[in-house]
Image (cartoon, rainbow, N blue to C red; front, side, top):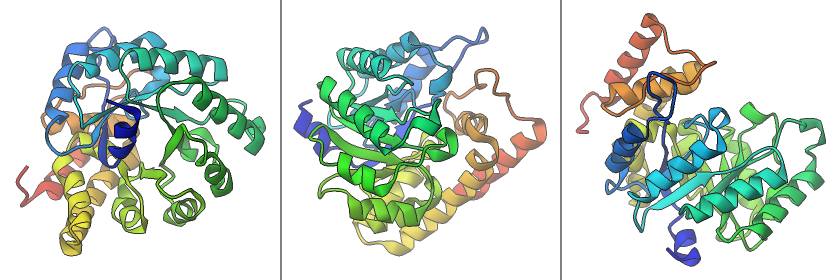
Length: 304
């Protein structure tokens, strides 16, 4: 896929794939492959590998690349393969990003460095993203998730970076619709802002977002794609009903239980989820019942 085509196709719903592990705690590429195969050809914009839902902080660089290589054999144009490659140093991020490109990634998702968060001011973040974007041959999507990193990029900094020719988008996962609207006003025309928050997906689309990278699309892709399609077709009543269902799921999976809740929900919906990697813990029986009931409520009356 050409760079131009990749940027043009950066819209719609993208699934941040979970990373299944076997009983020894190792990445199970066979189960991962089966999930990715089921996500192709159903209306999704593509697959994100080794993101937050994929437990990126717990994966080695080699494991991330194995996931990219595995997904690359399955994901075909016009669907995109997006690889999460952000690490703490510019040097390591550049190295992993280049290796991900060599392994077949169409676009790179790069989270804000955050360990030395007190020093990650506007100047440091701009220098970081410009250096990474200058040093790779594939487009960059910045990743802002302040609830995990403690770093909240300002709309002004995002607006400045949006003019870099190789920084083509932003995944904004704060869940703050007012903040997202400020970002949309600050960036250049054509810059792709994607929400990572299922709770505000409909509002984000109506505000001008290009789509979403939604953990719940890994278990109910038909609901997430349905919201996007309904908005594109101006079927607001349909979009609102589907958003209500998506909100029920999110409030009872990702919000209280994080990745552990999403992976269980993925499993209960017939995909391969399994347990998270330690130190995250699987859910208790009562928590499992809460997730199962949310799936039942959200999907009641819908054709999968």
